[in-house]
Image (cartoon, rainbow, N blue to C red; front, side, top):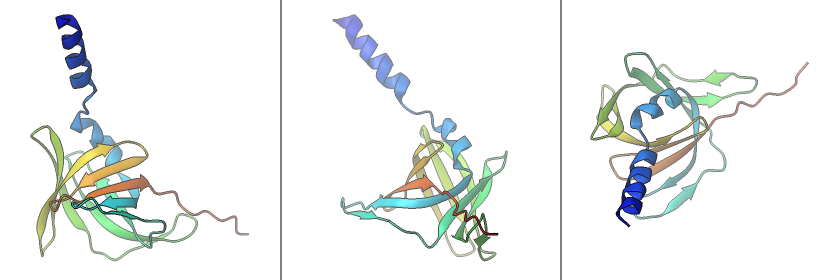
Length: 139
């Protein structure tokens, strides 16, 4: 019985996500699929006028900006961007944002090639999916 308990503990601990592995998936274009508010209310997003573009460099610094997608891999944006720094804290990947107006932290709960789940300081959980550009065959 003890061996079974140890085996279960090893499997559970071994399957818990290593937050460092999330970093490689953050770069790119993301659109919100749904938001689960702290009170449990869920808001679905069927269409997004803007998407988030995240860029991380080798020193775990980067930026996030809002983009308006066009057709055939075109995007429209302003020069505004939120500077960010990635930090592993308490076995979690935290994103520390800063702008001239504010500073805040978000926690990456999951990150894969196709999905990103982030919790903000208000305990709202954002589920993103990788953005697929609109490509039209125009001659």
